[in-house]
Length: 232
Image (cartoon, rainbow, N blue to C red; front, side, top):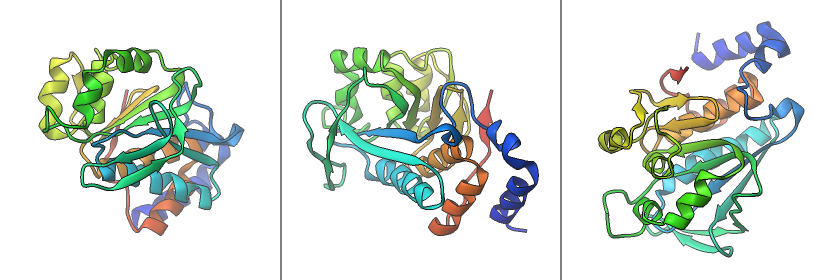
């Protein structure tokens, strides 16, 4: 039996109450409303860190889940250029006071210490102060975006993960680094390198919208979530 078939049968047999238990304190289950996700973009962002979660969450809406995804950036709306030159038209401004269900911070450009990417965010004290006080119920980090969360003090002493080449740097910032593809610590959800953004998004869909929706997304994408999710 394929994994997606097993999950579909499990979802049908356990019922709505059991699926609701997948939701963790901090976010509202989509059964009670729309899952609102903001993806923070910046120059030098890794394209796959953005497109993977965007595709998963977008298809979740087509599978009966209620998901609203918005690309945001600091300052005014405008164009952001990714690591490989892809240009994203970002329609909205990130407001740390506005709140929402999930803020997802992708990675990108970590090896280029003086170039665009996460290092510019890590050196931006005003941005880090805003990130530390954001009112989003859940903060999610993909790849080296987790280092940005660490610089804002959001991972200190907490279980999390990042790209394998950056794990030592994450540990140096006093995070509890877990060797897992996705780590769920309630209001902090993190993922390893690049393609693991797909797995993080699929886990959020499972947790917040239900296994049946996640199975539908996997079927459309022809991709199945990799690895066990580490949970406290």
